[in-house]
Amino acid sequence: MLDVLFAQEQGQQPPPFWANPMFLLALLALFWVVIILPMSRRQKREQQTLLASIARGAKVVTSAGIVGTVVSAKDGEDEIVIRSEDTRLRIKRNTVTQVLGTDASEANK
Image (cartoon, rainbow, N blue to C red; front, side, top):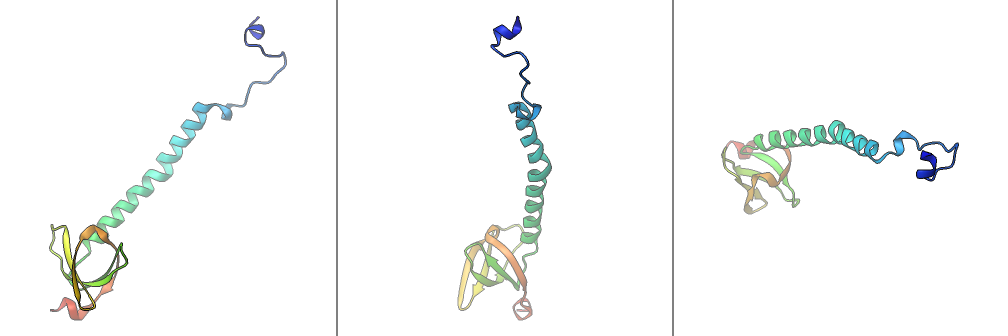
């Protein structure tokens, strides 16, 4: 009787469980929790340690590609001053993408 209501032929196999949209959504949610969420937390933590390591004399690269040496960086401030060639630039601390090392002569000034 139910076969008539659902217009199925007798002997037809039900679709496999992985074809269920709820299963696919659950699989996607599991992938996000196991792979993407920890990766984004790790990247955020690495960025915070990078920004905390910025000190006077550090050679840095900004997101705009400017390479310079930090002239002044105070803890708790959002801006730092870098020197690139003969120019001093005041930039936001979070634009620093990489710390290349330290310049000992600049750190001692």
